[in-house]
Amino acid sequence: MSKLTCDVCNSDNIIKQDGIFICQNCGAKYSVADMQKKYKQISVNSEDENINKTKSQAQQKNKKSKSIWITLLWILIPVVVFIIGVNLFDSNKSGGVGSNSTPVVSSLSKNNNGNTSSQSTEEKIWVKKAYVDEFGDETSQTYLTCDILIGTFSNSATTNSSCCFKMLIDKSNIAIIILEYGYSIVKNPYSRGTEYGIQVKSEDGRIYKFYGTMNDDRIIIDDKDESSFLNVLKNNYSLKVYIEEYDTPSSSYNFTIKRGNLNEMLPSVNR
Image: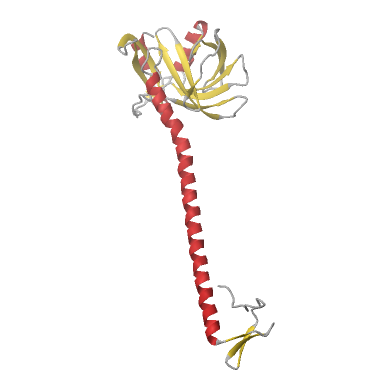
């Protein structure tokens, strides 16, 4: 609360003498009624200040809440766009990036040495789907696709930003689709194919090198590497994958893929 001050000199050195109030600085005199009036005015002003302070705090709190909601929206929008994009992309013949995962099966299987291992638990991450024609009807051409793979990508503008990947396996090709930031599908802007180097690291630390070409919106593993790539994937519980574009070496991608139930599903697409 503010102090009682003299109207003449603004001093707060006011003392009551002989029933009146006298400013010790300039000598101005005030009656009891005058001082009571001044006190009431100070009380009103102090109350207004408290009200304004409370309003200001409430406004700051509302502003902070709005800021949090805006941040959440910026996070959720790309996710929603990605889900919509995946569903739309899966509806055309060249798509096959839709996610359709099933629960983990808690069973044990034997590893390459014939020993039972809990690490060999087969996850139902691969599903069979059918390509569709120009009318949206399913065709007899089928492919395998896996759960959405989460990884990172880096280029001249960003480092280790979030990225999603889809792998497709059909009778003729093995393809990798890349979605930067989880929603922006990487496409080849050139009339010629874009070359990619693909390095795969197995569980025992071995590194295998393969090559692929992107002509439209996916990297197709080269024919000469296709069989070797598939064998490495079939014989490892999980693989670390590093992809680098040859034309712009600054663009690179990292993700991990699991074998899951791949061996069980491959015969369904004549592999």
